[in-house]
Length: 167
Image 1 (cartoon, rainbow, N blue to C red):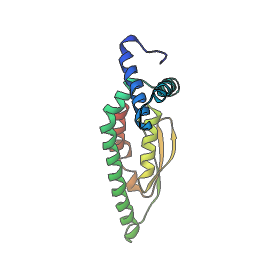
Image 2 (cartoon, rainbow, N blue to C red; image 1 turned 90 degrees about the vertical axis):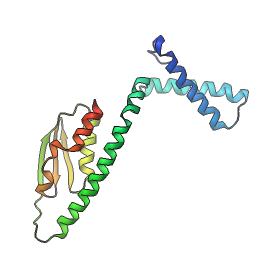
Image 3 (cartoon, helix red, strand yellow; image 1 turned 45 degrees about the vertical axis):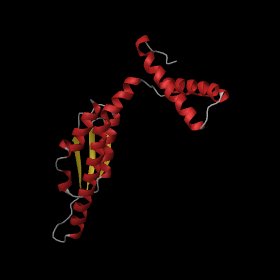
Image 4 (cartoon, rainbow, N blue to C red; image 1 turned 135 degrees about the vertical axis):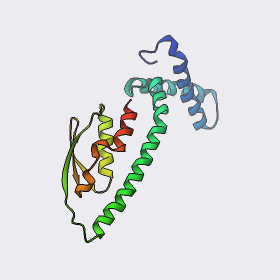
């Protein structure tokens, strides 16, 4: 079905096709000859579609599942940093002794993929007090509510996790 399925991967292809067919039967709630024949056709069409237009491969799926725990850790890190930044911004706004000095910070990264670069830009923007203004090649321009928020951006924990996800 997939255009470039070598002989040693036919088991993987059969497993995916059978999974689609099994889901078809489960969603129908009963099994008849008509449902079975129609399910084979729908499963084949769906499998052909994902192979052709969604660049499906079993190796990519396995890689995704291997990296899922790291991605979950990244999400928890992001939430933790958002909460910390919220309290920092609240403290900054409510304290009368500090004078807020907005600044534009620029830094470079060695991220390889566009997805990794977008993840970092979005993580910066989601964190209160910072907004990614521009991303050109590997150069980020970030508006920070205060100079203290600009410190250490090019060696943040976000960057470490994203690099691990890119590997």
